[in-house]
Image (cartoon, rainbow, N blue to C red):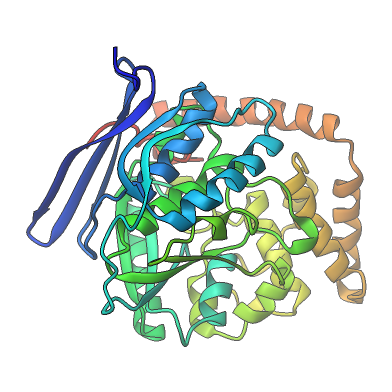
Length: 407
C-alpha cells in the first residue's frame, strides 16, 4: 500500500485556454472522498502551482484529520513559515491538529520572471477594499474580484452591476479588473469550514498564486484593526507567512477603524458612487440598505458627516431598522464599538449613539434567540412569496451555496 494512502492529494483535472478564457479544474481526494474546485477567467492567465495547492488543502486537512501529499517543489520561504502557520491555526481551534506535508521539497516551484511587476488587491467594492485601493493607488495595477463568493454565479442581474462597477473603478483609477468565476467558497464550505472565520484568507491567497505569473505583490484588505484582532480567515499574523520569493502577500489596513476608512473613502466621489457592502442582495439589490452590514456602513459615514453623499444607499438611516440590529459575534461587537466611539461626541447623533449602546449592551443569548425566531419567520415568508412568484430566488444568498456543482 502506498505511504500516501488516506492522505489528501490534488489532481489537475484540466487547464484549458480557449478564446481568451482560462479554465482550471482541480480535485482533492484521499482515494475515496473527493471534491472539485474550478476557476474560470478571461482577464488573466492562471496556472496551478504547489503553493496554491498547499493553501487550498491545509484547512480541509485540519478539518478531516488527514495529512496532505504534494509532488514537487514548494517555495522554501513558505515551508519555513509552515510550522508557525500551523501553530496559529491549532492555537485558534483546539479541534485542529498539525498535519504532515509529504512530497514537498524546498525550492522555486516556478521560474521567477523579472518582467512581472503587477501589484493587485482583492476588491469587492466594500469599505475595506476601497480603503486599500485609495491608500495604495499609486502602486496598485490590478483589482481582483471572484464571482461566487458574495455574488451568486447565477444572479446575472447583480453580477452585471458588479462588473459595471469594477470597470468604472478600473477606468477611473487606471487599474485592470480581473474577474474570476469560481466555486471557491463552496469548496471550503463542503468541508464545513466557515468562509469568514476560517477560509477566505487561504482561499484568496491560493488564487493569488494561481495568478502569480503576472503579479509580484497582492494586498488583502483587513477586516479589523490591531486593537480588535481575533481568529479570522484573513489575519495580519497569517497572511504574510504565505509570502514566497516571487510573490509578496500583504495584509493591509489594520491601522484604521471602519470609521477612519469611511473618512478616506469619502475623499473619492467614484468610491462613494460605487460602494457595495451588502451580502443579502434581496432581489439582486446592489445594497439592500436594511441589513446590519448596510446599516453599520451607513453609520460609519454618518460619523464622518458624509452619509448624504452615499449614492448606493438610502438617503437616511431608518431608526426602526437600527433598533432591530443584533450583536451575535465578536466581529459584530467590534464594529458596533467603533461606531459608538465615533458617535459619542457628535451631538446630532445622540439618538443613534444611544440606540447602538442598547444594542451593544443587550445579552448575547437574548439576541441569538431573537435572531433565530426572526430568521425562521423571514424564511417562511420568503418561501411563500417565491411560490407565489412575488420574489426572485436571489434573496439572502447563502454565500457559495449555489456554486458547489462542477463546471
